[in-house]
Image (cartoon, rainbow, N blue to C red; front, top):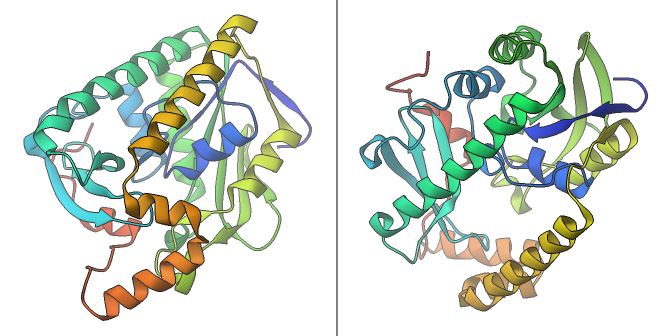
Length: 289
């Protein structure tokens, strides 16, 4: 990608939450969509889900397997949906019964899926943004080309460009894969002690997006103001609803928190978290075709 490009719509296609975080930080994403906070195996897998109208997505609680619990201020349980291969890392609290939360999570994602499908039907130029899980390295070019082919077959007449970020050193370095498909090497950021090497430096990605991408904001001024009011209200609600562990994490440096956690792990007082890429060590029992 060279020079500023204008799009009707930009959204995260996974493979983890860094893509959505960077889009929001760059001021290019204006609502929530299905892949924002989920873990998906690869770009073609996300494209296939979109093309199949999200067949199998949260179809049954029996398809979900509890893989892990996460602390680090998140206090969430991690579930793998064997029907789709998607991992839900941010949606299920450790402090409420799964059976109580499952219908709420399903309804939330149904809204996000409907919003994505409606927007993709109306848009003529779309940017799909992916951030790789650092442990896995760079995806083959053929995967990126295949993912775009699937999307363009689903939405004929719509141009899909792809920005794919993968582990590199320092500032983003772009490489043209094909017309409209760019792979960008960018420095990764690991948690303290390298325990969970699965995030990317979203500030670098956001800066690259601001310098190269423009997205049409369809909202009216009143809708923008309402969005800010709703976000502020939700943020306050989250703050008052946080438990002591989340509050402790927020009020201290994250690295200090991880040092404490490492001590608790060594003393076997809490279990070690599994790295994000462990999600894909499990076979998908019912892949989307």
